[in-house]
Length: 422
Image 1 (spheres, rainbow, N blue to C red):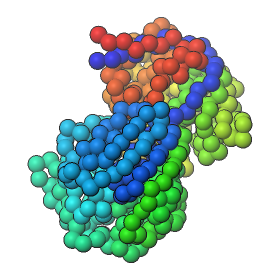
Image 2 (image 1 turned 180 degrees about the vertical axis):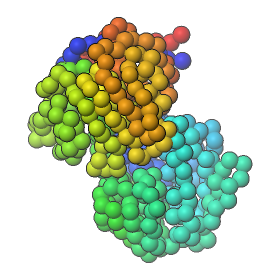
Image 3 (image 1 turned 45 degrees about the horizontal axis):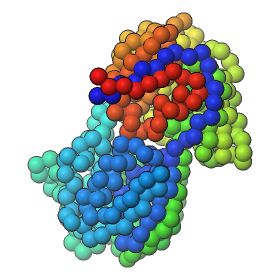
């Protein structure tokens, strides 16, 4: 099993190419099942989750060619409509296949999903919404089996709680449903707009994406298209927090205005980073302008608030801050498994329910630590950059789910980092 060794560094300096968004790529790939004609999708990151999704598509009969960040897909009549446990056990996003299969073929068997162990993250919202559109479900032998008589029917769906995955599944199902579907209390994340824009390129009629009310008028058929996935705002935010933790000056390339504006909105309140757009917004310069942070109070929120996917990285970057900081997790329960590992490095962290209290220390120290989920793994890399000595991160397969060529990108910025196996 691979490990990563990283040495502490006083300052980062260099250019980093931001990859395409993982959280856009997965639903977009799932939605290709809705389309019979050929599709070309560019700026797809080479991540283990993306590879798993292409394997799922192939198992359903799609022809997939993925190389050099370009994915060419031609969906065929599925060989079967069952997605095995072996294919989906490592990736929760596999559940996004459910909506496309039901609306296109009227049947689906999907194993209950795996992925990061960060709380319950129930799929009930997906199921209840699809039931309202006319699907019927049973759970047998660890599989959710869905059936539709005729076509799904458009309707009004109000989500009890904002859910990115449920919003995506409903949008995909609604594109081929009969009539109009209205989603209220929809998630507003940019990745949902990216999925919607892809489907619009394929002939779907979707309005209101990026807002809490989305309207979709069903079509009988979608067409082939070409599309480029948006840059990954979570990866960009992770590198910005690397700078905040250990100082430096980074140029982030392959970004856009949305990412620049988003990072400014969520990080400017810390009053420690300078984030400047360059090259018409296609590049961002990230500088640390103050040496110490003091008494930070932050809460995770749905977009446009501070993302839960950056919570672990923020905690790591605050371990050497001054005073007492408090981070509150509002999206997922049990998303603090990185905390015990950061304590092993000398961080003074205390959990109080959904809050982490950070009492800043002058120094943290390299140690052998274990990644427990995707974002926790990147927080341990940030801590390793900030620490004295060497840090060894175990179970870095979590890291490979969401970060493309991380070691190479950091190495180009002066970091001593290597991957090895034992």
